[in-house]
Amino acid sequence: MSSNIGAEAKVKYQEYLDAGSLEEKIKKLEEFLSLVPKHKATEKIVALNKSRIAKMKRELEARRTRQKSTQKVISPFSIKKEGIQLILISTYYTPGVGKTSLLYFLTGASNEKIGKFTPLPEIGIYQYDKIRFQIVDMPSIMKGASEGIGNGREILSQIRSCDLICLCVDLSRDIKQQIELLKEELFKADIRTNLPPPPVNIQKTGSNKIQVLYLTQEAKDIDDLEELTEKIKEIVQENGIRNAIVKVFGKISLDQLVDTLIPSIVYKKAIIIGTKGDLPHTEQTFIKLQNNYSDEFPLILGTSIHKRNFPKDFGDLILKQLKKIRIYTMSSGKIAEKPLIMDENSTIKDATLRIHRSFYDQFDHAIVIREKARQKRKKVGLDYELNDHDIIEIHTT
Ligand SMILES: Nc1nc2c(ncn2[C@@H]2O[C@H](COP(=O)(O)OP(=O)(O)OP(=O)(O)O)[C@@H](O)[C@H]2O)c(=O)[nH]1
Ligand SMILES: [Mg+2]
Image 1 (cartoon, rainbow, N blue to C red):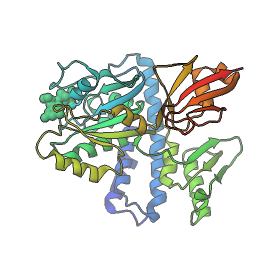
Image 2 (image 1 turned 45 degrees about the horizontal axis):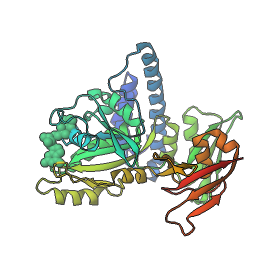
Image 3 (image 1 turned 90 degrees about the vertical axis):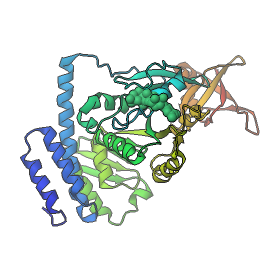
């Protein structure tokens, strides 16, 4: 093994080789990686070993799926998703940060459960501007949750499918400890927060080779493209893929490439909600929270449920974070009460397909009413890009 690796890491590597079970092997190799210094000289070792972890995790997942299909028990943690789903999480070691109080405040859920430990998820609907947001008050997360401690696997598996993760932290207690633990467990459960998916796509092909294509100028702007290509091929092969086209759309690191090869990785949006902002010294803590975490978390709120201090436009803030817009359909001059929630940059075409395919097949033109525009009412075609709050009327042939 390379001289760039310290003695402690080498010991861990040996422990990995000696480990018996797959779980143990993954754990040891993860510990080994955490001890390897990250720089250019170790980049390949890191990427190759991350690939090994990815392969072992896939194997583990496959085993669990096989087990599950024979077990047919419905978990009390399993939640039927309705509308846009927000999950409130906090750490077990800071009990009572105020999640259930928040659920009560936003949704009118029962207040009898405030002040008592919440052992199972509680659900409520937060209505905002005729939009339904499903709020899930999750039991708090223990260290080792990603390995299954304290129902961690069930909790994290729900988080994997939500729309927005809300890290709830008590502003009157140590915030770093709270956030770091939550971040660590999410990361270990292959949940990446506030990161865009890597700009790379790997397609298996029939041909017997691995081809790497750089499709943008940004992707090509790398010092040694040939060296990178060789490394990419090696890592893809290490994952047991012999024939593939690797399309690179932007600047990527080997780390990101490995992430693409781990199918269990999901990319989620997350915000921080600071609670109990009415208690002494919490103002300073909130400033510290913003200073230390605003690079990683684009939205950090300071709140107090006791003082009913919570953003009135919370629904708008969520939509903005999720890059969603609301579109109101109009039929015979009557505007629908409930908006369609669509992705930013959606077009009339997307809207027609969303309403019903026949609106697309028989499309003639659309009328868009945009209150703030210079020309308020416009006749447009399928390619027209929609804005938040637009009113649209589709005319068919
Ligand atoms: N000072 C203050 N106390 C609050 C606030 N919000 C909640 N609390 C109190 O904090 C305690 C715990 O609140 P819960 O809402 O039950 O906390 P939780 O996060 O659901 O707790 P667990 O279910 O144990 O994880 C209760 O006594 C609440 O009254 C707040 O804004 N300010
Ligand atoms: Mg609770």
